[in-house]
Image (cartoon, rainbow, N blue to C red; front, side, top):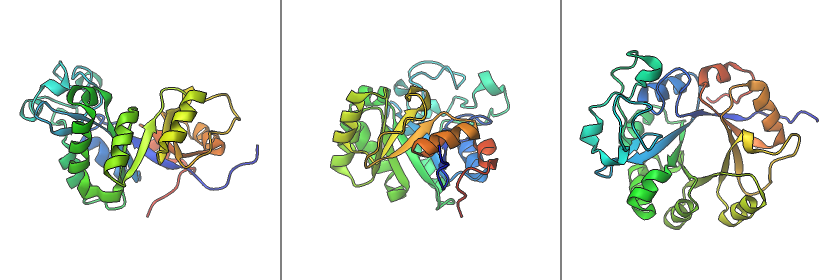
Length: 252
């Protein structure tokens, strides 16, 4: 295969999650300091309807508490450590679950950074698609075109298209003909997929009006091969190591 000219763009997956607690301001700041200009974070809603940065439906994996995150108010969630004590011990004991508003405040000091906001299915189901989409669109409005709303939920993507002109991304469960037909009908700006779901190389990725974002990749050589197959963005938790590779685009 001839080497494709150019370079992919790195997306910091949940911030610099290889070295810092995921979806925390500490990890996001570290990712931007390492050179990332695209960040991906996960959005759930608290019991009182506040968009927060959190991946799982349950608190147990990344905090010192347990139970469904959607059943705690923001004030209650603030009492918990979000420093992933099971992984980092007491190193990040001061870390707390951030709100989307706090992320926006942080990003005001980083005007060249764009953020992918994933609307998690657990909160979409718990609060309903319209309620969650409205809250995230409203809360993220200061970011304007520096935000991309993404989800596994086609209903959420359709809702976003109906309500706003911002960019959207569909996260794929499968890479098959039925998914390709749905993607063509949905026409998101981005298609986002775990690279392990792809057919064997060197088959190129589906062409279309979208840009491909592939995750979770920590090997620059693999990132190069995926770029040559059509991936525009490479998503990685190991932001620092990947940005040190000569492969990736450098932002001003």
